[in-house]
Each structure stands twice: as structure tokens, then as C-alpha cells.
Length: 158
Image (cartoon, rainbow, N blue to C red; front, top):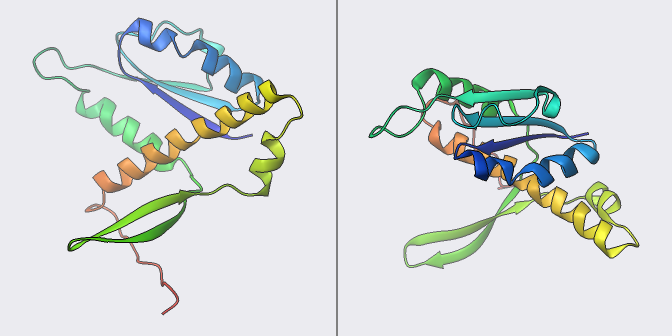
């Protein structure tokens, strides 16, 4: 079972659109956490997710969350373990290096996604692709906090 964090900080309707996704993830055995704004925090039943995190909105014109709710969300993202993959160098564009991030897709992903029924296989694949959002959130968090972290460069075999 994997853990998935769904983040919907927008309006109630936008959060409700996630209902089929939430139902599918739960049916597939995933453990859910949901991050919502104080505007849409009450729309899901308490048992929908293992944890519901509410980010308080600062009134107009200062959009965003409060420092306390942002710190809580950061701590939860920081604690999430992610199997990311590896960077792949693609060359140069002028003086700038170009790279992509290869997301891990091992044998377990293939065996858990495959189905002789095309619709089931599609839903299974979509479930796995949705997990990529947790990886992206973690990378965004790491980039935003790189000055605060003790990062070590991994040897490239040289």
C-alpha cells in the first residue's frame, strides 16, 4: 500500500472534482492524505482520508496560507518518502545543461498495473501516474528548502 497526498487549495467545486480519483485510490488500497484550504475543508467525510490537512487562507489581497499552516504542510511533505529515479543529462543549450528526471518504474509497477482488461489496465496505470504528483511536490519542496538542508552530491562513478 502506498501513501498519496492530494492537494486542492482552490474552491469547493474544484475539490469535489477529485471525488472519482479519491474513490479509485481508496478502492486500490492507497492510504490518502488530503490538503485543503479552509474554504473547502469540510466537503469530504472524516473517514475519506487518514489525515486531512487544512491550510488557512490569508484574506485578499495577500493570497496564500498562513505561516503556521504552511509550516505544517511543509513538514508533512518533508516527511513523505518518495522513490524518485535518476537525473538524465540530455546535453547543452548554449551554456546551460539540459536534463530530465527519470521516474522509477520497476517490475512491481508493471505487474501491479497489467491487466488483460484494457479499462482496468488504464485505471491501474492512471493510479500509478497520479503518484508522480507526490514526487513533484517533494522535489518542489526540496528546491524551495535547499538552503536549509544538508545536501550531499552523490558520486557519478568518477
